Image (tube, rainbow, N blue to C red):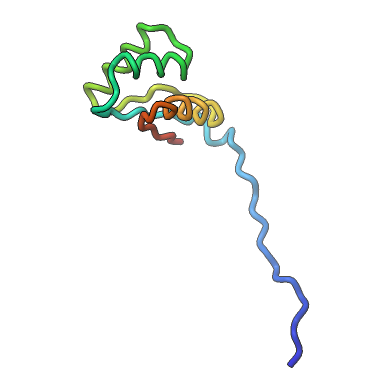
Length: 95
């Protein structure tokens, strides 16, 4: 029996251009574990906004169950999501 030494032919996949996926968005979901102050503080840290904007977003999350807290390039959305999740807030990044 003869063994083949040929390498399998693999299909080449094109790299995905992140720019075609912009803008992405970060959705923050409501929970019953964090205080308003905790969420406000983390939003300020994540998206570098003022207190008034963070309070508005926090109330939107509270009243609607979720809110888009950031829109922009995918890399920025991933950073924002990671900062929010530092205190175990639930987020989702969508394209």
